[in-house]
Each structure stands twice: as C-alpha cells, then as structure tokens.
Image (cartoon, rainbow, N blue to C red; front, side):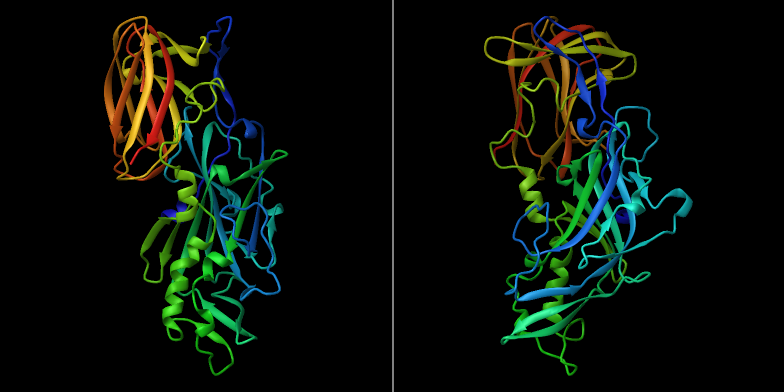
Length: 421
C-alpha cells in the first residue's frame, strides 16, 4: 500500500545558485525552503475540532449545545514520511519518499494516539531532522486501526429528544490509512515544524440525521454493518475527508487500496479561474520560487533585471551542454485539474535567435502533463501563448523552460498559467 510507503513532505536546506550581478539586479535563485534552512525538528498534535474552518491552526473545543460529541477516538500511528523534489545527487524514490519515523533501529515501533485527549507528539520524534537537499511537497502520517491499544470504534454522544444517547461508530471498513498534508498546511516556528492533525466533527456529521438512528437494546446507538447500516455507510464515506489533509489513501476491509483528495482543501489550493498559478511570475520577489538547474555539461547564471515597467529574469547560458534540458529554469507546485482548460503565456527574447522547449510535467518523473512546445525565440521580445488541458490532476505540476544546447542570453518576463475554463 502506497499509503504506508508514501507519506509525504520534506524539509529542506536552502541552496543558492549564485549568478551574475548587473548593477541594478538581484543575483541568484533559491533552491529550497528558506524557513527550514537549518537543522529542524518535527512535532505533531492530534485533536478533535468542532469549528467550521476549512484549514485550522488551533482546534475548537465542543460547545455545550453540540448535537454530536466525540468522547473517545484513538488510533495507532505507524509511520511518518516526507516527500520532496530534488536537484542534487540523491538516491531517493520520489514516489515513496523518505521515512522519518519510526527510526531504523526500531522499525516495528508504533505510537498510540488519542485525538480526544489532544495528544502532542514531541519526544518520540526527537531525532527527526527534516533538513535535506530538496523542496518540500507534503508530510503525512499513517495509522492502523486496532493495533497496540488503538481501538476499532469511535465513541460519543448524540442529542436525541433532549437526551444525550451514547453511540459507537465501528471503523471495521478501514484497516490502514494515510493522511497527506500539503506543505502550505504545515506550521514552521522557532526551528520546529508542527503538523496539526485534526478531525473535523462538523464535516463528519453535518447533514446526517443521526438522531433518527435506532437505539440498541443496550441503550447505545450502534453504527455498524448490522445496525443503522445506511448511516454507517454515510459515515464511512465521510470519515477520511473529515481530516483537513490535502488527500488520503486507505486499505478497506477487503484489501482494496483507495486514494482521493479532500475536496474542500483541494478546492482551496487548486485556485480560482483567471488567477496566476505561477507564484512570483512577475519576478518582483527576485528569484523566489524559481529554480535554475544545470546538468549534462550545462552551465548558466542568473540575475533579476528591471526596466521602467517591469522586472524580468536574465539567464546567461555560459555552456549549452548536450541537450536543451542541460539548462532549465523551473517553477514547481502548480496545481492543475484534469480536464480543465488553462492558458500558459510568457514574454521572452534572446541575444541569439533559436529554439527552446517549454513544458508542463510531473516532478516525480519526466512525464508531460499539459503541453510540450518547441518555442522559437527572437532577438526582439515576443509574447508566447498556449492553451492546454492536463490529463492528470496534480497539486505539484512543474513548469520547465529548457534553455540549453547553445551559449546565449535570455530575458524572460510575465510568466503566467491561468485556468480559463
């Protein structure tokens, strides 16, 4: 199951590709996350949240008039992994990521977690160092139901006819599951990354008529395959999406692996129509969020240049290398939706006429997902535009401008990718 071998995120060292420096420019492109540029640890908190917020930092406690209150919710934490992209010589399976916990000397370790007690994990993660030569994508956590003091059920109370009736919701449909958190959901403070894993009660129960459920002979409402089955199925469908992670993966009772996005979180991250998905596409923040990558005998340096109207990226290719991708100007983490229509446009010129390649693809392998175009570049500034439709939904699509194969200088401005349909 990939969910137990792919749980997500990577914290990074900030590397710098120092470029040429014009008198009115800012040289260099950052590779990595500046807020985690030093040795940094991980903590995590696990809680029940009664707020209606889409993304939370602090969980809200139950109010006195809550219709549904969860009293006991325990799971067993089995694994924490991190996922990154890399531009250095790292022997890493990008799809499997890096295991952070348990440690190599205790691979069988598990950790009982109580969401209702507001568990905070710090000491168990004391040897985690999130520094690595990559760019953070996701961090995730994997759980197993009913292993070493975990429980198969969630216990609570339902307000029914003015009385609080106890209930039991059986988690028998799920064996293992992973929650995958987008890097933007992770809080970084004082050299510590904190992952907040909250279970959103209103998301779990709102709109369901749980007070109509049949009370068992023991005075308890049971949500299971044998009692209140339809409501149990509805709760099963909501359970994993009630966490505020970007996506989840799980193994069901018959061993089938299933994965999906948490719709409200994904909608928030995937962006609205006519919004530029290329952060710092106007280069007003210098080289922030851009990567200059050279390989296969390619070499280049960079600077930010400014004219009366705008900023731009200057890329001076000093060695073209063997291929067009020997010198690459890259932008990661462009969230695209399969089947939607996007427009890609940018302005470019060069001191030498020639061709470059522009493409949108995945970071895990060299696969196109949207477009790959050979672009003619002139000595006069040109606006380049393409419409495209991605085949695969991807929160982490990567824009590649392949500038290698010959020595020349480029000026690039106003890079945009916008959803238009």
